[in-house]
Length: 316
Ligand SMILES: [Zn+2]
Image (cartoon, rainbow, N blue to C red; front, side, top):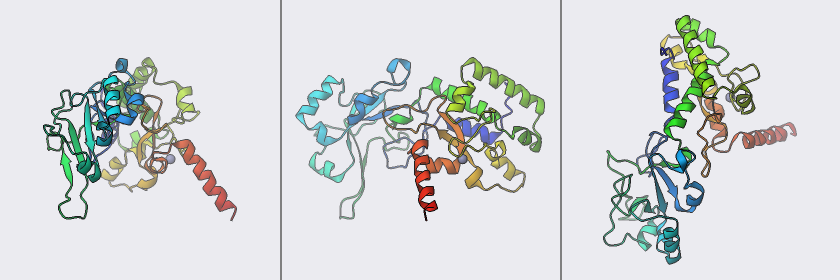
């Protein structure tokens, strides 16, 4: 397939395969593939131990993280055994508070972990913030070198590489399904024949992989009845031009109001622990602004909240 996709769209599609950003001092990796090593909080282990695909196996393994106060509890230790969790192999003690560090310190002989694959090179990892007290600086141990920053990704961000690829195909198909695509092509002087070829081939690919079911896309608020891509929250058409606001900027045109038109990846059912929602038919393109409003609460509860706000205002 000739690659005629505008660069900003290519970049947006590429980034959908990556996790969100993470600060230096947190335990998560910053913007890495969604198929990276998964971190599972011990209390969520039963819900998350089985990967959603690949015969239940995480492509790059998992590390379970246990609070020290649990780990040093004899009853929990027996439980760990029964769950197949072994310290230093697929389990680490995770220190997050000063209280934990002072009251359940790492045992003699323990090391801070250094590897994302078994054996993990240690038994614990620490991310304890500083306090205002003298001598209570932050404690950052394990997975903190520039080469090895972060132990893994949030379990709910996970998708295997095959799923990531399918999502990208569907998302490109949705880009070309924007109502104003012809205007974008004309305005940017793109080669119409190449565009047509690309649309034909991506449509064929999407259909062949079962990713172009209009009824499913419609019922998930990803496209409208006419098949045009819409924002899953406000249901307005997504603009291919808004998508490529960088192209417009480069050509010196007026920059549209980015808060309204900027397009970002939208998870229809929000990402949450215990579910694996980075998957086809759960991803669409939405307005950045609408995405921010929905955040982690989901479309339904956001709409409910909006109704209440409007009702209260109308009642004034
Ligand atoms: Zn919107």
